[in-house]
Image (cartoon, rainbow, N blue to C red; front, side):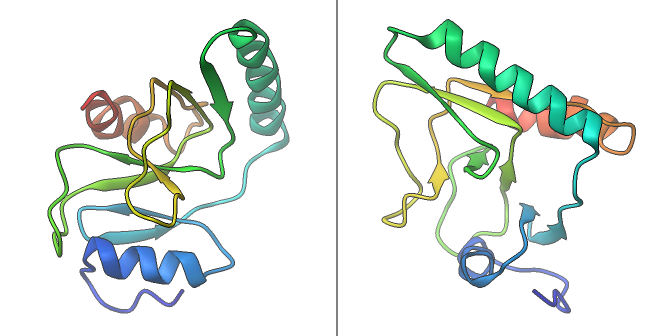
Length: 135
């Protein structure tokens, strides 16, 4: 993606992300490349998805993979830089999914968000990211 600038608007991030072959998260104007996952992390994610999917059977909810971007935090204003766009390990949405825009690739109404912790991301996942997910 070549993130040479220091700050990007949400719309600039989404335009770049949609054209990229790699995944990136967006936090308050900053774009961060996502690292690959370990074998243990991958196994936990697959097991978690299977268990959650089984629990949702017959309910008006569905589990979505880690490829679905989620917008978190306060209401986003056009051309703003404030916000979090991330790829959680597993997302559950109940009822009709709602999206950031017509591309339908950024979910804005998740019911539950799951993150599998790793030593390098645990502090952020339990801290600022968790606070933003709650809003």
